[in-house]
Amino acid sequence: MPHEVPRLPYLKEGAYILEEAGNAFPILIDCYSHWIDIRPLATKSFAFVINAMQDIFNIHGFLRTALQTT
Image (spheres, rainbow, N blue to C red):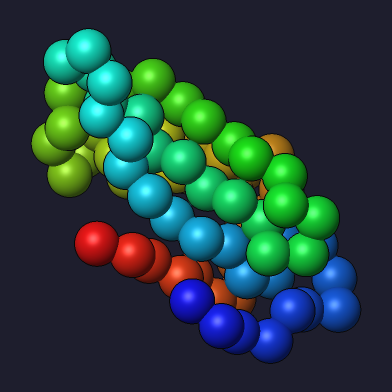
């Protein structure tokens, strides 16, 4: 997906859910540095996805733009 690259890290990230061998992992990819953050999920429920992403935001700060693909 074409987009403008931000001037600073962690302002814009791509968000994905990876499913592998019955497990789900939310993946956030920083559009500036291409750093990848992955967290395991106990279930793919909305609450678990939000909690996993909150852990990542607590480390790097809240982003301003999220990109998503389906």
